[in-house]
Image (cartoon, rainbow, N blue to C red):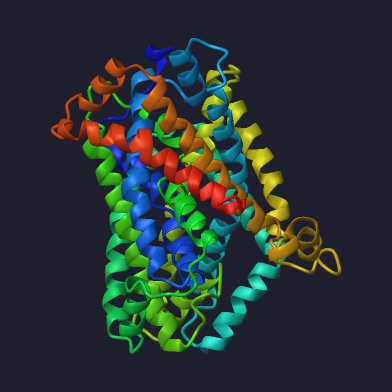
Length: 460
Ligand code: PFF
């Protein structure tokens, strides 16, 4: 099987694709809004700690499993454990997580597409801030807009994954990712001139918040998995397309660094605008869709930059969605031996159907009193989560950390010393870090993740 497997054109190709998977809606849409909800400061600091001490070691572990086995997650665990082992459950959990995450991720990507269209067709230039805020509410509540764009986004994702991931997407990421980065820098310059910049800076970087709770720590941990695409085998899958002699240590550090830079940059762009116009930083999922159009509506050239921004956000979402779908598809192709085209269409279609309840979560139009109320009363009890929120919560706060824990424990305790050490040190100039890495995987990751879990369910 290893011989049939395609490989990245170069190490750079892998870094690009993996960074394309990591950098997505998690960085520009989700991180700023959960930072807002959790009061900034402490939350950002805990998140950075989770990236460095937990996320990064797990990323190295995932790439190592993929690169050494040259197989997708379930097959990789089978190969290392000689079959039938419960460790394969970690691979299956990842496939399930791919279904859950992509089903609502695609709704948000649909908003980005819709906003691209809105900023081209009507434009935000003539609009007052209040009207721009109200637009998001009406988009979220409109079932047809949500389902329509969700379908369109899934169709594009399916079309690309069906053809194989390299070629098109590697090329697209190579051009689009740097453009996104430059556009964020331009916006940063604009944001530094806003009155709210000082307040925003303090909000993001000064840990003096009182909003922090155990749930915030769980969320910071969960998000560090989500943003780096960890805990569900995406990096195992991408690592399996890497040649065995490539250095995984510096590649992982580069990916984590780029991802973190984009997330912090997004906060530094959004919060000054939010504080300047007096929006609530805890406004939730609409944050980027309100603050960015407001900024552009007041900026010369905004009419041109607004569609560009949302288009790039759509592309960032696409490179991540591709990796999500690829995890599920590679399972059906490698394990169940379904042809790639059939597997992709089938999986994509099921995810589309799975996403419909999320598409209806903000609305009241379709079922009179509202599907939103119904899902809230079924699942929400205390904190009133709708379907969309629930899927996001379950996947990022529970499934990914659990999967990540499994991967860390597997590599640290179950994989042989020789294979692990050789894998880490191959071609790497950072081989000296080996014992640090093993220490983090053996002790810090399991203790950290378990402590956060136990706290979340009220045991400690
Ligand atoms: N890392 C992506 C983001 O931050 O938007 C989301 C994601 C992609 C999560 C792929 C998990 C995954 F396997």
